[in-house]
Length: 161
Image 1 (spheres, helix red, strand yellow):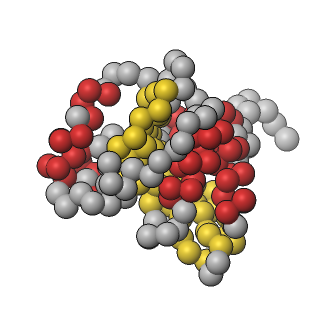
Image 2: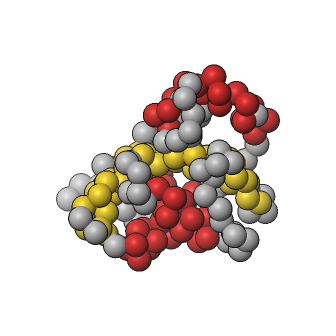
């Protein structure tokens, strides 16, 4: 786990931008934290760093927004208004299976069995006027993202110090 304390909005934006290049081939990021902790801010910054030039809307009411990034598509989901996992079926997420997508899922705890498992969890928390952020890789791909972004050092096998 990689953690940062006391990030302002600019710091949170820089953190997302740093991760952008590594996630450009797709995968799943869960964004966890209480209301107002910066989940949508992080998603907007990441999508902007990936090249989205259209307005990046919060999916609070639509539940899902999609963006074309050329060879990759991005899906931004906000499950806050989901009362039961069965409601996620209405979003048609199966239509996206098998393609090259970057999934950004806010409020994943609302329907964990109905969404893809994360490669990376971004946990955000209030810290006064700032935010604390933890990056947790849950798969080899997530760890690779953190390594490529310079958040963790790559260990070289077979070397002796």
